[in-house]
Image (cartoon, rainbow, N blue to C red; front, side):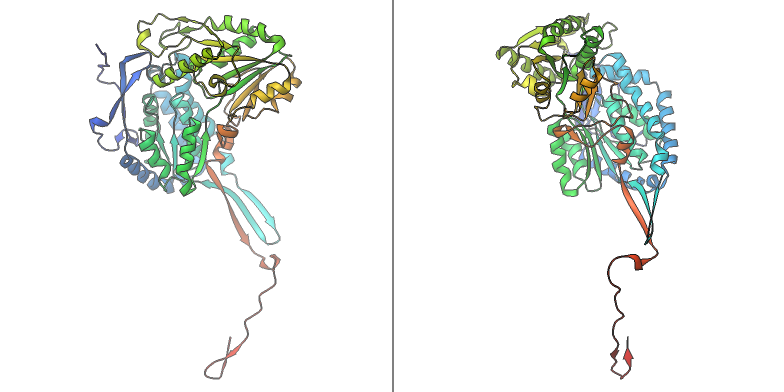
Length: 518
């Protein structure tokens, strides 16, 4: 028998404005169940698939809110953002973390980090307000000019399912500080904890500054990316979807911020010290969130002289992982969030086997009673794999990793750079100079040395992709800059200093009356 959630308070992700006011009535046919990936029989809540009409009405509200929000100084906006952070802290973030674990599958510490990130990001960007408000004066022979930043206008934020609250906040908050009202489209896969978070945030801000329209990419996403009232689109997700958004936004020349897929390499150099710390960091960097992190380790390249040593130590460490329900304290990694991703990872591993790769299954099952009803996959470590199979060349987004040898630094760099991706990478060495020399040759937006996991890129460090891993940068003040545009106000008090000859006075000509006219 199919089990469903019977709680009268099971959350529904509805299109919202101003905190608690729904954007219209949603027909029941447009409600989609949100299921627990640890037990697909369990319905955690429902998501209303917002229509193009909901997007239209949300944009009306955002357009109406835009002048008032832009007229505030960033310092005044920052005060409201801090108040919103306080409100998020008061409204039971622990409960939202439990909700996120149920809809996503990730373990509790990750959900706590994800949900708690919203308040932390609000406070961080509030601290950058003075930098936004600062204006630069310029003088020349013609007069004076002032350079200032101004908002772009209504901004659409399209959120992925893997770290929904944290990644939404990284896009949303810089846009708010810069003076833009924002319409957010959560993923229909994990909309519940994010929508609850955004309801609290919206209630702490002026009406219409934040609106939420959950829905599918093909309907709500398309409506946002094609509407000419939207001046910027911020998106985190797959490269394929990024291309679709770029094409949809082209006719109206929207500003784009795209953080896209990654096939992130870790290079373990001959000069590395393969000790417990290195192994622990690499295992964390690979398998956190079951590998469903945009910049987690996807490929490991090891100098041939250290290859056997690393494979043995890494496999033994990964064998301690426990796969199960994210609510279970013994669980190390949870299930895959979607069944389609579960099927894809299994297919990638099967293809590797067919091409002669050695696949080691590691870790153990937790005590969950619903193993067969969950999207659970034990981790796999893959060796002896050809370099051209999909497991190596594509982003897996799951608990599997190929480990491959190299002979020289040149070969390692060529292998690392040999895909269309360039989000992140890491270099591992006991020689800081050696590591830095190699890191500078890697085509990636971020290269970490002796680390490669959540937290390695903090909020002050610009983050984004090279090549087909995206456009623009998140984190730091650069994210605020990308949500605004420069304006120059020039006061010309000495036109004579400008180039070009003076235009002569027009010649006089006789009037019909015989008088001369100018």
